[in-house]
Image (cartoon, rainbow, N blue to C red; front, side):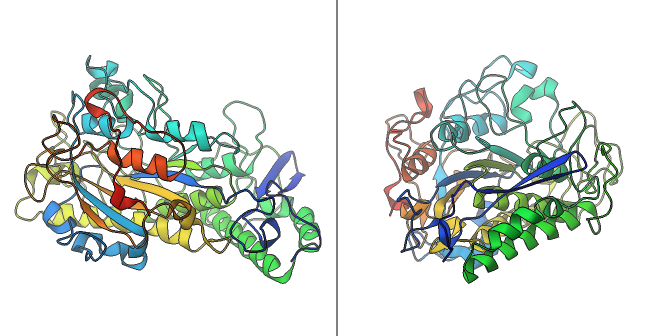
Length: 483
C-alpha cells in the first residue's frame, strides 16, 4: 500500500521543447478502499458506456445462436467471442418502428436515437434527437476530461449529397450536429496526451517531434513510484510500458530522439480511407494496425478515466469499404452495389455468401479484441470490462434484404451487449430472442429496438425510464439482461 493516499485525479505531468504532456493513471490500490471494490472515499468505481458499430448487418443463419437463455452456444460467426462468452449477451429479433426514409441509415437513426430522422432527403437528412451515447454522457460523462470520444477505423462513406450528416457519424448531438469519428490514431494520441500548441492546423504530437511522452513525465513518475507499494509500482510500470509500445507503433520506430521544436503536421502511417475512391488499394485502410492502435487508445482513455462514454465506428454501411483479403475493384458510378466491397457482396454474392461471412467474422474479431483488451486491464477487484456496458450493433439484419424487423424465427435486428455495468448486467450472458409481438399493439414484428438502449441506461444508473419518441419509444426493459 502507498505511504500516502493517492487521488484518483492525479496525473503525471511534464514539458520540454515547448511540448507539454499529461499522463493519466489507471486505478491503483492506493486509490481504493480496503476491499478493492470502491474508491477510497467510498465512491463506486466509474461505470462506462460504449457503442461498437459495424455496417451492413450479418449473415443470420451463421450468426444467430440456435439456443436461447444462459446455456446458448456461440454460432460460427460469434466464435471470436469465445474467450469472453460469459461477458456477452446476444439479442436478436428486434424491430425498428420509426420512420425509415433511407435504407441502412433509417434503421440506424431509429436504433441510436429512438426516433426517425428528417424526411427531406439528401443533404437535409439528419437526426432529430441526440443519440443514446450523448444522452448517457450528459449524465455519467460530465466530470471527465472528455464528455465522450468517437473512434473510427474505415472511413469510406456514402455521399453527403445522398445522406447528409447521418452518413458520417453514429454519434449526434441533435439535428445536423454529428460527433465525427477520429480515424487518425496519431491525432487521437495527440488529443489524449498533449495540451496543444494553440496554433490552428498544427498538431502537438510528441511522437511527431521524436520526443516520448514518457520522457516528459519521467521526473513526475519517479516521484510517484517512491510513494507506491510493490503491487502499484508494478501496475504503474506496466501502464507506462504500454504507452511506450503504443508510441513505437504509431511512430513506426523508437521514440526519444532530440526534440527539434515545432513539429510538422503529422500523417497516419495506416493509409486511412477518406474521400473518393481512387481506383487503387494505396488509399485503403490498413485494418489490423489501425484497429489495434485505436483499441489501445480507447482502453487507455477508459482505464484512466479520461472519458466514460465512447463510440467506435468500425465500418460504415452502403459504401465502398473493401475488407482485408478481397481484391481491388472499379466502382460503378451509378451504384454502390459493386464488386468486392462488403456492401456490394451483400447484394451480389450468391449462396451462403462466404465473402460476407468473412467480413462479419472480421468485424466480430475486432469487437472481441476490444473486449479482451478491457478484460486485460485490472481495475479494483476485477477489470475494466466489469464496469462497462457496451452495445454492439449494426444497421440491418442482412445487407441483401435491408430488413430491420422480425417476420420469422431467424430475422430481426441483431445486437451484442457486453460487460457487467458494475454487476447490473447478467453474468454469464444469455441469448435473448425477442417475441414477435412487442410491448405495444403496433409492434408486431419484434420488440422495439429501443428496449436495449433503455436497458443499458438503467443498468448504468442513469435514472432514465423512457427512451425514444412516438413509434420508437420504449418504457420497458429486457429483464433477462439485468442481474
